[in-house]
Amino acid sequence: MSETQHGRVATDAAGPDAETGEADDVSEHSEEAGGFDPAGEDAGDAGFEADSPEEFEADSPEEKADDAREEFERELRMLPGDWYVVHSYAGYENRVKTNLESRIQSLNMEDYIFQIEVPVHQVTEIKGGKRQQVSEKVLPGYILVRMDLTDESWAVVRNTPGVTGFVGLSSRPSPLQLGEVAGLLAPEPEPGTKQAEAARPSTVEFEVGESVTVMDGPFATLPATVNEVNADTQKLKVLVSIFGRETPVELSFDQVTKI
Image (cartoon, rainbow, N blue to C red; front, top):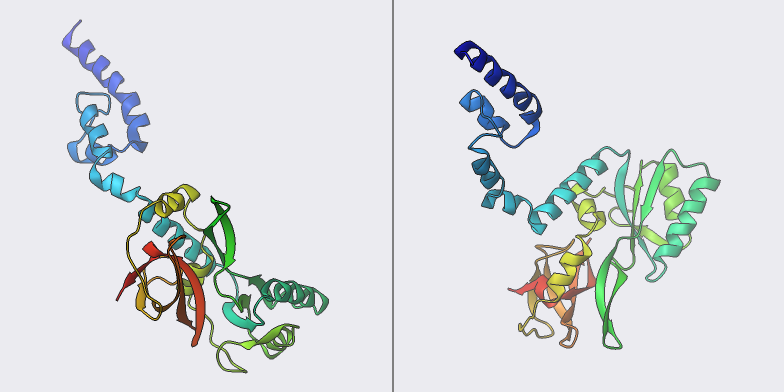
């Protein structure tokens, strides 16, 4: 084979790689090196780089949870209206949600009141020696309402049976920040991750009345006071100051740290 033919064969062989390799992880190397062949001798190095510590760190459960929350917050930003906190009788949160949804339809307020949520999270309970996941209200006595606040929409919500008022000024409450809403409503991590966390042994001892800091969940970074300690289930009931009121929240030992 002549040198001219050999050069043409080499060029033709490189062509498909250049076309199909642009979506590979080695695209940056192709630009810098002026023709990196992913099928060549450096392919092993490219695979090694994809498995670098930085890649593993980016794929860690914590990073994935942060990414999911940021994506959820971006989705919230696209929705109309603002989020307000409405106080209700404890234990009547779901009934208030149903009542308000019915009033929105009957009073034709769909263009002003868009969404009602009762924030819940999954907790692990031990019954009969078996662990099981159950839903628990994050904010007992509170619901979140996404709405355009007008005199009419305020009255519809305020006069719903079971509602005791908005959190904030009586006639002009302040909306929540989207970061706060995302913390309350964002999807939780995969069950496998939570089960692995729950399986971690904890030897930390807590006392009633002790001050702690919440390290995980929607109340992360907030100070709290220990109200109950259950060593068997490795759970605490703490009082967290939310919207100016102390709210009981159940957390596992590894979700708080001593101050």
